[in-house]
Image (cartoon, rainbow, N blue to C red; front, side, top):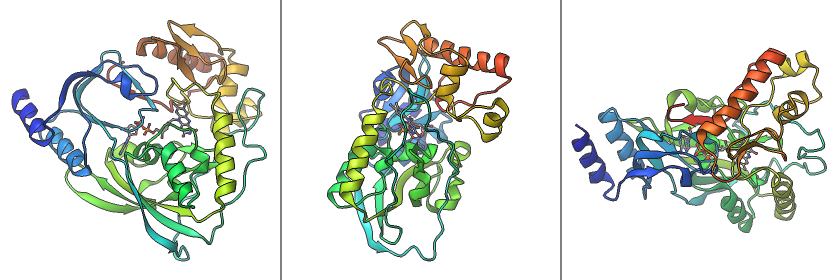
Length: 345
Ligand SMILES: Cc1cc2nc3c(=O)[nH]c(=O)nc-3n(C[C@H](O)[C@H](O)[C@H](O)COP(=O)(O)OP(=O)(O)OC[C@H]3O[C@@H](n4cnc5c(N)ncnc54)[C@H](O)[C@@H]3O)c2cc1C
C-alpha cells in the first residue's frame, strides 16, 4: 500500500523527498520531519499530488510562507507540499466595479500602548474609481509582489508590507494589515477541492476576522484575482516602507500573533482600552518576557512567541498553554489561537 502510494507520488513528482525537516519552510524554524515533501513546479502538479494523497487516504498539507504554523517536533505523517509557484499578470486595466460588491471584514485591530506599533498618521484611501484586476498564483510571496506591483503603478497591498506570507495563506487566513483585510480585495479565485478545479467569487469565502470557509472545506487556492488600484504609487510606497518599519519590531522568527485579538464583548467585559491580545498578555497577565528553553514571549510584542535559537515546538506549546491557563483562571477568558498547530501536540 505504502509502496504503491510512493510510486504514485513519484509518477507525479519524480524528486519527492522522504523524511525531510519542515522547520526550514516555516518562519519559526521549528518542526520535525515530514514523511514526504514536494515543491511542485505547477498548479497541475499540486492538484495531482493532492489527488494521489486523497486516493490513498494519506494526510496532505500545503504550506505557503509557513508564517502562521507551529509544526510538531515529531513532524507530519503524510505529504507536505511547499507552494512556491509565483506569477502575476494584469487581467483588466480599467475594471468597472459598479455592479459588484465585495466583503468588508469588520476590524478588530488596535492602535494603543507604548510598545505597540500603530497606524497613526499613515492611513489614506486608494481612489475607489480606479480599479485594476490582477491574477496571482497562490504561491506568490506578498512582500516581493507589493514591490513588483508598484513598478507597474498598481497599489492596494501596501498595508500587507512586512508580512512573510503567500497569497494562498493570505486568502486562507483573511490576513490583516493595518485596518485592511486581504479577503476584501479578492474578486474571484480558482480553487481545488481534491477532485475538481472551479472558480468561486468573493462571497464564497465567507471572510471574517482570521477566517475563511477554507478552514472548513480544506480546499486549495491555486490562483486569486485581486481587485487592486491604479493609485498614487509614491504615497503607497511611502506607507509601505513606514508600515514595514513599524512592524519590524515584531520578531521575525515567530508565527505572528499567537492568539486572536479580543472580541468587542470580551474587551467590554474586561474594560480594556484596546482589543489587542499583546496588551492583554503584557499589561494584564504580566507574562511578557517569560522564557521556556529558547522560546520567549517577546519583549517587543507580547502577542508573539519568538524562537531565540533552537526552540522546540514543545517549548512554544508550554508558553501557549501558560497564556491560555492564566487568561482562563484570572479573567475567565478563553483565548482563540491565531496560529495553526500542525502534527501531534
Ligand atoms: C513576522 C510576522 C508578522 C506577521 N504579521 C501578520 C499581520 O500583520 N497580519 C496577519 O494577518 N498575519 C500576520 N502574520 C501571520 C501570517 O503571516 C499570516 O497568517 C499569513 O496569512 C500566513 O500566510 P502563509 O502563506 O505563511 O501561510 P502558511 O503559514 O503557509 O499556512 C497557513 C494556513 O494556510 C493554508 N494555506 C497555505 N497556502 C494555501 C493555499 N494555496 N490554499 C489553501 N490553503 C493554504 C495552510 O495549509 C495553513 O492551513 C505574521 C507572521 C509573522 C511571522
